[in-house]
Image 1: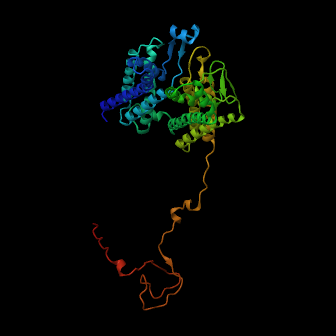
Image 2 (image 1 turned 90 degrees about the horizontal axis):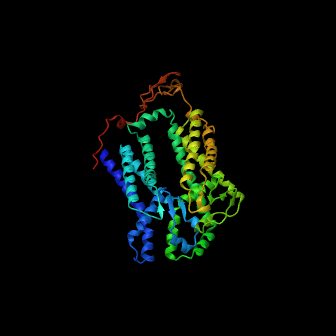
Image 3 (image 1 turned 45 degrees about the vertical axis):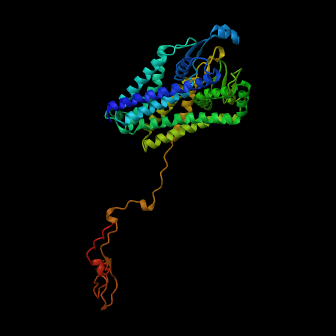
Length: 460
């Protein structure tokens, strides 16, 4: 495909992705504006709030300064008037990352991966600049470089990774094809990438499964917190949409819980399989799934992480085939280290601050999570990669037969007399034959068999 066309399509992808995210941030605020204010307030006043929500969802920390009037009405002390809000609703970043990966993969299939990635990154960064310049907000301040760089990285990094993966598979007649032969003769890089992808998907799947189990077991606590909030239908809908935006964060928290280190909901708190230590936490309904007591069965979640490692190792071994120990050890080290690094990165983006004081620390600690995930994933991968392969015993019909011992129909031994007869025999066998003579094997199927082949009738 023409490089110019690929560049334009990638730019269009970036525009659509940013527009969908901004509309998703603006839509619930518009509903509140219509129902709560009945159009008495200028609709344009919603744009700064929607822009800040979109920027927060793309990992841009907000520096909140509450006005004095608000402090007087709510009774909040002055020392809590300024705080950082950095716990990002990862639903926004997740959507942009998936769209970026799709755009990069499509550009690579068209043979212009680098051009597509560069175009998408430039356009997404330009949109981030426009959002920053058009959304002055005295309550929630941001740094301009963060407001531009963070959204652009959220889009371009997955796009670049997807473009490289596709170019690795189909070739690009460029840098990927030049580097590929140097990264192992047995496909170690491809096997490690496959195992790493399975490991990351499996870890997030385990975390999401724990969230679902928590909702099933402690659904009554969630409903009670909704009732205690005393909100109307519109407020409940907006409240629920806000919590849905944080569902990817909860999946990462579930991953950290399954691995062992757990996560925090405030300074000095910890929620892990080894025990729960909580103080006063915000009355957000979804936090009702947090277990209040310890159970021995919670420790079995570590086995789920090891099982994910085994699946990752099995997928990598399928790509490696029958190779020696050195390539398998290299793949084991790569999946273990990169799996721990990926868990640390997910912990960083899924944690942050939600308020002043003790609420400045919310989410998993990246260091312990990376160490625990790396060790547990490594155990599962080692079991799959280093276990001796099972050899299927060779059956009799699969045994090799030398050519000189193969059956060649040449002659049939004839060891008895054939009585003379006037009836023609098949193959014109002589009327008499001595014992030990041989005769050629010629089968006679009648005159029709010796006739010339007949042409086939035409097919309509």
